[in-house]
Length: 256
Image (cartoon, rainbow, N blue to C red; front, top):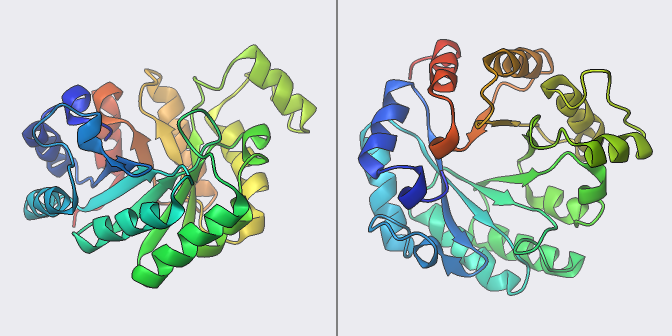
C-alpha cells in the first residue's frame, strides 16, 4: 500500500486484508521524509509513533504488518536509522525499494554499504527484503551486491503489462533474454528474475502487477511462481488491484 489518500481508507484496507487472509506492506518513507509529506490522509505515517499505531491496528485485526521504503542513498545513515525505527515500531519486516530512476536510488556502492551496516547494527535480526526490477539494464545501475549482502530475500517486480513495450522487448533481446511470441509474460519475467537474482543465493519473493485485469495471467503467475519454489507473493498495489486478485489469493492462502 502506497498512500491512504489514494489507495483507500485505513478501515477498508484492514477489513479487506483480514477477509482474504492477507498481510499488508505499507510505505512509511522515501529517503529521509516520512509519508505524511506526500499523503494527505490523517493516518499517513508521520514518524515511528504513527507506525506503532498502525502496526497495532492491523495486527489486532489479524493482518500481519510489514513496511517498505524507497532508499535514495543521499543520507544513508539517517535512512538506515529511519528503517530501524520502523522495525522497532512493530513492522515484521521492511522492504527496500531499490530502483535507479529519478526520485529513487542516487547513491554509490559505498553509500549502500553504509546503509546496510547501520541498519544491521541497529536491527541485526530484522527481516530485510530488497525489491528490484528484473530488467538487466536497470540492475546494472544499482549496487546489487552491497544490498544483497544484508538482505534476507529479493523481490522482483513482475509487471507483465507495464514492461510489455517495444523498447523493453528489444532491450531484453539485446541483453540476451529474447521474449517469446507472447511478449513479456509472467512466466518470462519470472524466468529472467531467476537468471538475474539466483547468483545472490537469496529467496526470491515476486511482486505481481495488481493493475492487470487479466485474471488468467494472474493464475499463471501464481502457478509458475509456485513451480519455481517461490511461495511468498505480494501485490502492487491496493488502490489499483482487481478485486478478483484478492479472491484468488484467498483460495491459495492458508488461514492463520
